[in-house]
Amino acid sequence: MTVSTEMDGGVCIISLNRPERHNAVDDATGAAYGAAFREAAGSKDVAVILLRGEGRSFCSGRDTAQLGRRVEGESDFSFVRRHQDSRLAQVDCPKPVIAALKGNVLGGGLEMALAADIRIASTDLQMAFPEIGYGLMTDTGGAAFATVLAGPSRAKLMLMTGRRIGGEQALAWGMVDELVAPEDLDDTARSLAHEIAQHGELALGSIKQVVDEMWHTALHTGIRAELLAQVALFGSPEYLELKQKRQAAAR
Image (cartoon, rainbow, N blue to C red; front, side, top):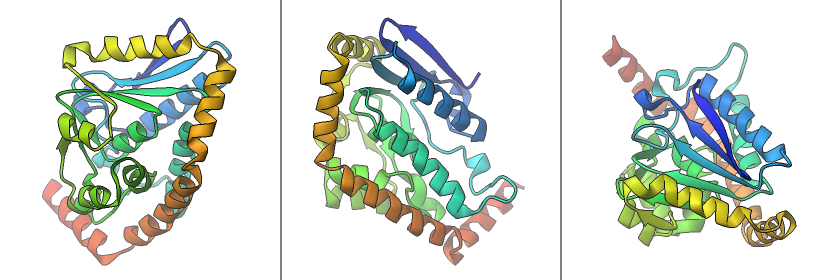
């Protein structure tokens, strides 16, 4: 089982469970995560959703073993749009979403984390957008989230270099909200989830909506801009050349 769920009072804990791959998301894991999140978002018994990863990392992003692969007949546009719709469903969920971050938080995994409402991180955090190394860019909101949270210059620095930043830097840049020791991460995140869950559903949903209205139009616009840019990059000579080099090196 690559994704597991646990109910703890009014808190639904969704755990990515591919620790041997640092919880990299392949097609099966992505489908399982989407199903688990939709079920939690639609359940009257769930007040808060908590996202976490088993093993050493939260999520290392798209499984590179499947990078660029499509199901038969699916276009790059359809593939990216489908994943964007899944990310927007997380953003637009009326229930509070908390992410407990540790180890590698990369690419699509970082986008998943940034789409949460609150992020608690351990001091061993390493976050990055490595897509530039593949001749690509973020495509489920990374550019938009990073710009809103860290500012345009820092977003460009991360996106254009693929550099990793640690917990202290992520905290200083506003990309995480609290930093704790690795052994305290799960308890801290769970405690926060329960603290929020004790309050009324209507009030929590209203607060989330009001705050999000300040920036959601820009976010949705940015994500759709990423769609067009990424589809163009998938057909670019740079991407195709790097893809051929990776395939040759893997032989």
